[in-house]
Image (cartoon, rainbow over all chains, first blue to last red; front, side, top):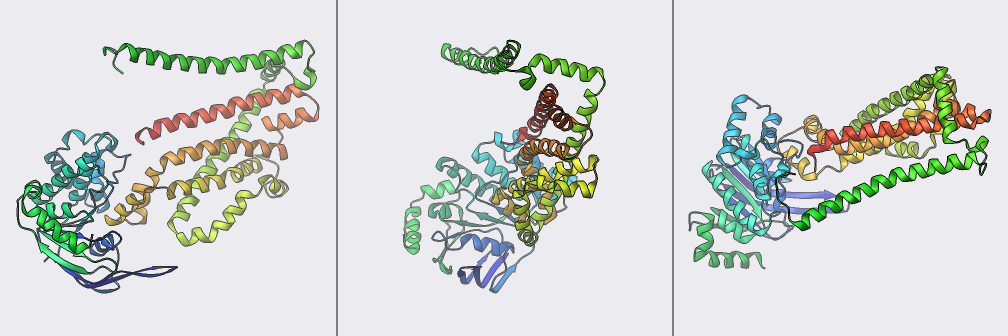
Length: 241
Length: 269
């Protein structure tokens, strides 16, 4: 197990009061697994990623982390427009003081492997939305994280690009043998991508159900699989939509 | 745009229209200036207005000529330009530094906020007598005036630029483990460059206000001095001439900053 939440609770404090975002939340992510967390909007999904990455400290409970670093991927690609795509990819190396020729070469190789070769010296503004999100993924992978935390990274894209990028990102993560924890409000995205789907309640979030998904071998084949619709129905009911 | 591309008739017409519009705008700009100067000259020559009070373009040119001949033209221009540029540089550099300090600590920022607001609203000219007593009657006083007139806006604009940075980018930096220093260097400073260039443009204008105001209060030379002196002895040719040169200098300095902006900001969109 590379990440384990054990009875985690988290409360937000603001001037006007306190809000219990997460209560007694327990789940685990195995090495190499792609896990999705779905829940009604505003249920504290992003909080879970911040907790996992250690950006927030839980009010109670324990988070057990395996070896290796975390990589974050956000809703917006947040590429720096004053840097070239290549310089953007190097950003985590600079910040983690691992900006060696070897690491840079690895990052470039990764970018080239996944179709960014011709774009490395270009400005992010010259890339399409899908390519930008791919560049953001390569930037995340450049620091060689063990586990990727994905905060609705496809939600800002239009529908067609979204399907494309979503499959794209999943296959890159799988072929690089990384672990991923994705939060999303999109049921079909969760089913198409994940080995395991965790369904959260509304706030304060706790686990309603866990599903292992094992039909189909790619997001595309899953979407076309006859089990997809049934699975969608189950999750939809659990979310109460 | 490539020349060997065959555009449609409609597109050629469209391009022509664009060029025509541009020509009309440029020509109109010059025309306004020429008409204004022409009428001014004619009215002064034929006594519609009294050239003793209004001066005239030819008298301005004559005055520039005589200032040049007695060697005082570049002396006065140099002094005012030096004061303005020095004050501008000090205000921008220290304003930026103060903004960085205020950015680094939310608490310090909140403590100092009311002081900045009050200093911003205060008419700096009110400090004139104090400045003379503290700094004497030399260039230091004028440069100091230039700095206090422009620095507050430098601080406030720079801080506004820092605050307008995409929060997603800040989250990203945090998630990648960047500290305050790294965030400043890799994100805040480069991301706020376009707004910094805007700050420079505003500061140029204010620096001229500061230096001329300083020269009004205390000076023995400079364009502001010429204006005050000319007014006192009723040499309005001198007042107009100094004002005209000021227009050229201020416009020129603004153009230089705009040019730097174009060079620096081309990678932002």
